[in-house]
Image (cartoon, rainbow, N blue to C red; front, side, top):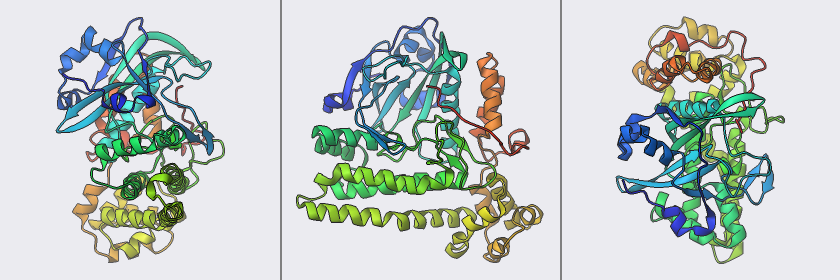
Length: 451
């Protein structure tokens, strides 16, 4: 297979050559054979020692450079500190990034870093990203997880691992922050437009990025997904969800829900995600400002009008998404969030109860939506039960099930992980084992990024 290095060749100032470190005993833990075949890879070759060397970066690649606003504070010089772009694969006339994480030190590694990651965190990214794909959310995909045979210290000694992911690209809002500092904004924008939004001018490019991200985050909200670290370096130009570190799925509905151990102020709480996206897009507009118009007053006017319209744009998308999923009117969809907050039900069970109610089975929905008039208004809108059933998954990666599977995998027992992976990648199939919420309400539950 021909591996391209398109990004590195066209934007050499935004990469640094790097090479994955030699691993003591690398072994394939899990391979996404279907995705491998779609990309044109021979799964048997990827499992070979030569294939594993390729996936772990031994043949070399590039660490990507970017900046980022991290928890609101600007970090001007960042980049792949434990990851590398292996290159791109061409499929159906499009380029797809192959990106390996946990490969060792790079030119962008921070002082004291080892450039590695835990096997558990890599398996977590594989599972959650493939679940998100099955749920229809724009996301990076997981190609493989490889154990390195190396123990690393993260609170306690754990086995290290590498995840190889596939993305439409890894161009981030933070990539534009860096380009703006180094006067390469136009080159990066031209590249991003050609790759993701062909034919767009610079103003249209910004609007299309905004709409792509709005669609993605609106879908997160319907599922109860909490990214956990919505920094601008984790916000893609393509609209794909990226970097499954301290992410988690909410069970009992509450806008204030936070699981990330590093989000001590709740900046990236479930209910804050729309406004944080708007904030991130405002930072992108600042980086693109010189491209919007040669007249800086006109450029500022476009940027301000675009950001001023974000809240309504997101609300319209969210309302339309809820109305479509519940097969109801926009008016009823407008009261959905208030009803969920008033009653605080498990978000996934509540959606399934509404599907049952649409089919004439009201008992569970009456229990979960006991307060307020939402359920009566919803039923009066005559939703089509088959449409609601097809929109509302039965299975999400519930947090305690994920932790249990990862604990078993760390001990070398992959059976529970494989069972959960099958369930979350077939989310509409009934699966009583993985449909129930935590009986203790996830009290005190925290997630970690594995760095």
